[in-house]
View 1 (cartoon, rainbow, N blue to C red):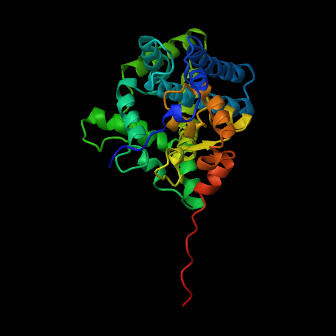
View 2: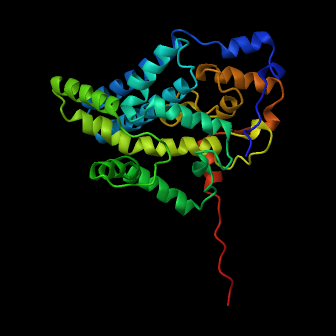
Length: 315
């Protein structure tokens, strides 16, 4: 099928407005990367200082969401908008963002740009994330249970690795990312650092457990919010959904403005930190009626779990 239609920003924004939302900062991208790692370290320190079930649950949720945040910043770098210096943009993505959570910018970038080119068409490599919805509430809950119990993590990360070690041929994964040398180097740094500090157990408890539980869950919720049930039409403003996340949702589900996904698909070279400005401008210009906008992730879950199984006819 042909590539999806695009929006010419010159038909939407004045030159001054477009300059304001498309301008890249020299320091915001690195600060976002630093903030993700600061939250990860701070959440781990919270549990170490006050070890109890509540502080551990909070730590797992915060760390898992910031692991997603690192993947989101790798996504940002795939568009070249994490930093205006291309070399620094790619280096941060490989070593500080994608690499630590098992990603590879080199493999991810062409894959993801194909998703933008053929959004929600059969050539879209991400179509499998949105096509199954809506599902029943029971099906949705089973997906979440698999995420939170590590089954999704095993299927996506451990099983392919075991098969690779055994030399088995498997169907290629949806995302062409598998842990490479950067992943293991970063894990080694984390293990050595925490061991030297006297917390040898921190890597499995405060890095792997969040990666195996909360990270898959919020990754699924992110995908559902972005493209599930958007009823894509020719209008590019219908190719993705924007979810108006509240502060708690931004803290525990959707960091780094990732919930402004309609704006991202329409103007994919706008840095993530300018997507909220872009959203406000679009609302002021009357584009809200053309966009897919949902108020919060609870509404996303309600819609995605709205399928009703027909009762068998009475004899």
